Length: 412
Image (cartoon, rainbow, N blue to C red; front, side, top):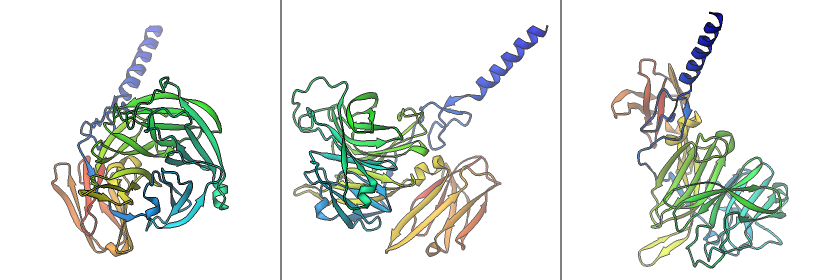
């Protein structure tokens, strides 16, 4: 009897563990959100979405072929993908060039993206759309200390694709071995390829120290477009890619809540950017909510001429819940307007903080069907709103003065 009781206890414990570990869609923003799921199996499905820039600034004409962005030391940093071997720092509010730093002893064959870790800046000289047969692919590694001293020093990480065996010239824009996006983790570099033929992207990994390597294929995904830039918050398990369709319709791809470095194992959401015929190239963020997106100069006379610009995107309606922090910051008439909401998910109350120049403002909370469940007026910079009487579920908070975006709120 003791043995049977022990076996029964083990069975009950196993059943309890199995019940607790339910796989499914764990993102409340998804149409197939499973409230019982505890393990994200990457199955989330999302409705179509589009984001409009909060603001845009024209870049200096010298940056007509800007091709990558990072945020570091309170500046935006960018470069061109032509023969220009300078690194440029930009004011984050105006996109005006603050400093031009030449990189000595290097060439710009096709610099396509820029990334960073705590000690180095990395520039990917791996554009390969001419014929798809470059044998001199490389990543420049620049010590941040040398940048701060005004004399950038670069060393080189050389690589080839482990699975590329055919180097026959393929012709312009006719290869799957082009690349315009990279991220850097604590121990590796990951490349996201720009596949002209398949409209997919493949992820390759290589070490981030100088040397010569064979980049190893890790995974691939059908993004139905051309990937041109990437930004990464390692502590948040968040990668955001930018790109455009064959018809120059820009998009961003949100990858988050993934496992390890399997970036496509978690949530995957494609969002259109309302900038038709813009060749978007670089993307950067510091907090996962406010993003900078750059585009090259593009003209198709007499129909289209789009100047080189940096745009600000607010992605808090899409990522605020995941990051457990909702915030919006925009510029209007040279003044900064900001709002944040927390905690999220919430139980009995939420806190809404707004900048003084937004007051007074009305607020409104609607359910997923668009029905108003609560409304009121914000008269203080920090307001506590009780939501205890609201049922558990997904809601949307909006503030009507100057802010068109809304925050998704989870009532637990």
